[in-house]
Image (cartoon, rainbow, N blue to C red; front, side):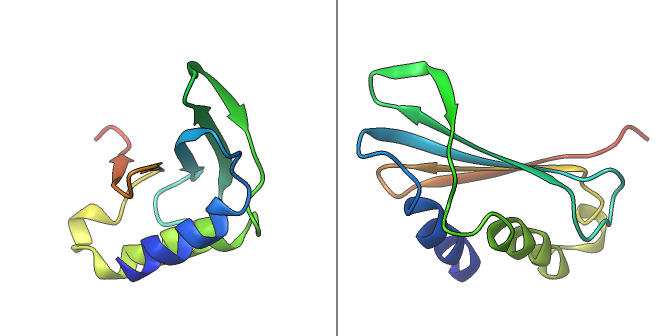
Length: 102
């Protein structure tokens, strides 16, 4: 929870006032990579079907923190290639992973 709160503090600085949900999507080329591509998308209250890019306080810090969470996960859950963190305006969040096919 501490890492998610840290990420939110940075992400929140780039959000428009009418945001409904903020998405951070981290794509790694291969499982276990220390860096990858990141996208920041926001969905506004009255335009839930039109994501927009936004810039948080630091573009590198949040994905680095998210990748760092791997160390706290069970070994079998560390091999993800995509992580999607969705932050909702009400304070709830979802963190989903995609894994390469076996």
